[in-house]
Length: 64
Image (cartoon, rainbow, N blue to C red):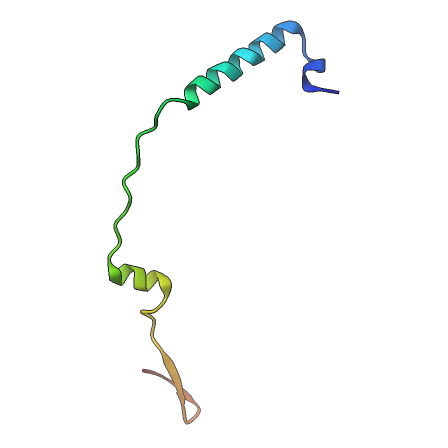
């Protein structure tokens, strides 16, 4: 059964009005968001190239 089979004619008309109203609301242009500008150092931090490197020396883990 379809959704409309469970509704009365009045309810179907109200539902269609709401659908039309929501379509009109979507067509309005939305203001554009400003993009955040990231520096080179920020990108390196995100990617993970600015992390400490560790090396095992005589059984102990040392930071390079």
